Length: 172
Image (cartoon, rainbow, N blue to C red):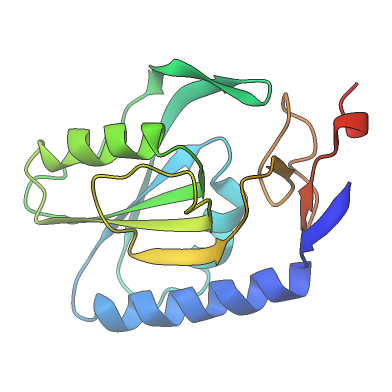
């Protein structure tokens, strides 16, 4: 594996994103909706930078097997919070093709929230096909398969503190 983004660079960027969200949502009470499993590290770090009255909820959606998209969305867990008239911030580990995040943004927008924003740790802008602008981006990255900082390959490597490019020889 080769290093793409260091732990130190990640922490600096998360602090900056937290500051921006605090400014943008001053006086509001947003609901942070994390997409499991990958978001948990980024979301925990981001929430520790937030100085607002917030709620936290999660969805669990599966669209990948191994290192490729299946092309279908499998909903494993839905949100439990009432989002009608509320400000929603979706927290995602990585936006790759855009398939999953497009699905969730459209689904939540149709449920009556006041607003829906997206915060992602990593964004593959070159390959993403989105119906909206991403509001908070940690890092734009090239279209390589990455692990670490919550991202996995078959549930491995999530615990790495940095973001690493997974090389073909790393897959066993």
